[in-house]
Image 1 (cartoon, one colour):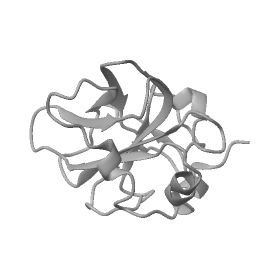
Image 2: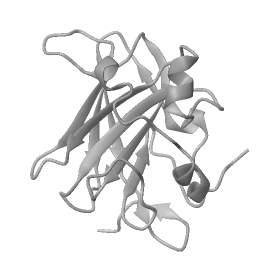
Image 3: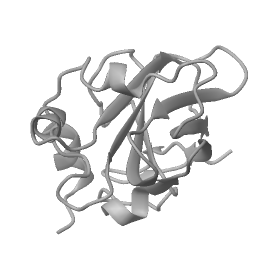
Image 4: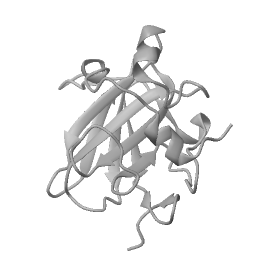
Length: 167
């Protein structure tokens, strides 16, 4: 079932600090971890938030509290958008394998998601349009070391659709 982007953004309760410690990459740690380079930012304000979920329908973008209570993978990292240079986030993952990845550009710096102002991107950079992608479309496979991936941000480009910025 495909949910409208409006619904998934408005119905995800969350505990902002959940998953942050588990996701924290440490210097000289060999992995497995996912290093996300974020491209296509609308501006250099606010925060970037990357989250890793099981690459399974029903778990992707599910409530973080429920996933953790069920012993499922959930990781989150939040950084201020750097004023210049590449925007990169590192997320440690529990093991080698497939995960679903989302990245939010919270331009106001808050924890939520504003359909009007914020940007969103996913692993493998699926086309968004009017609905959230399926878990397999947002998939990133973590290897034994540090796995690099690039996520292109999408911003509102119509009444309810999202797309990368036209530059």
